[in-house]
Amino acid sequence: MMNRTISRRALMQWALGGVAVLQGVGWTGLAQAAASGQLRIGMAAPPTTLDPHLKSNAPNNALATHIYDTLVTNDEKSISRPGLATAWRVVDDTHWEFDLRPDVRFSDGEPLTVDDIVVSFDRANTIESTASFRTYTRNIKSITSPQTGKLLIETKQPEPLLPNSLSRIRIIRAKFKDIPSDQFNNGTAAIGTGPYVLKEYVSGNRVALSANPNYWGPKPALPDVELRIVT
Image (cartoon, rainbow, N blue to C red; front, side, top):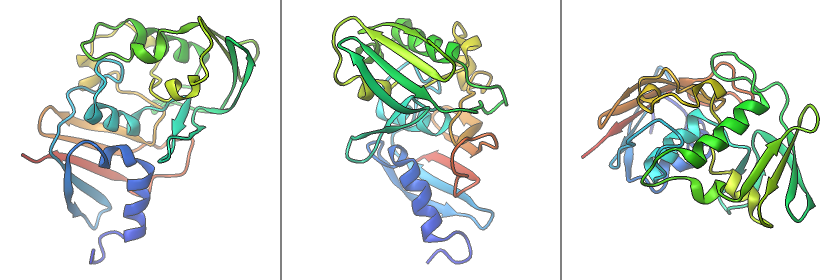
C-alpha cells in the first residue's frame, strides 16, 4: 500500500505515459513515492548522455522520451500514433505530408518551428557517434514546409516505414545544432517539448525531472520524478 503518498492509478499513468523508462533499461523497482508527489525509481542501467542524438541505446532513449518529443510515437503494439505531427499521408512514392500540432512550445516558452525539426533531423544524421540514429535518417532527402502547419518529407527511395523512423528522432531547439553534447548534460541545451524538464543530471548517479509547465499534452500525473542508479 502506498499510504497517502500517491495513488496506484497516478503511478500507472506515469509508467504508461513513459513506458520506455520502465522497459528494457534494467529498472529495479520503485524505491519511494513520496507524499510530495515525487516518484523515485531505481535503474540498473544508467543513461550516458542527455544529448538525444548522440548515442542510441535503451537507457538514453528512455530518458529522452520524457524531455523531448518526436513527430510520431509508437504505442505498446508498435503502431504509429500522433506526436508533434497529428496526421500524415502518402503523397507519392517518395513524398509524405504531415500535419503539425499547433501551439507547441519548448519548455523555455519558445514556439516549435519547422527549422527546429529540420535541424534535429540533420543533426541526428551527421553527428559523430558510435551508436547513431543514422539508420532512421539516411533515406531522407529533404524536409520542407509548403504551408503553415504542414511538413513535406521527401525520401531518396520509397520508405513505407517512414513514420516508424520518425518516432526515433527527438526534436531540439534549432539554435543548439552545433552545441557540444556536454551542454545537454548540464541542462543548457536540454530543452524539449516533452512532459518533463531536466532539474539535475549527475552522471552514473541520478536524474531529476519536473513537470514541464508548457507541455502541450495532458499534465503529468507526477510533478517530480527521480531516477537513481542502483548497482
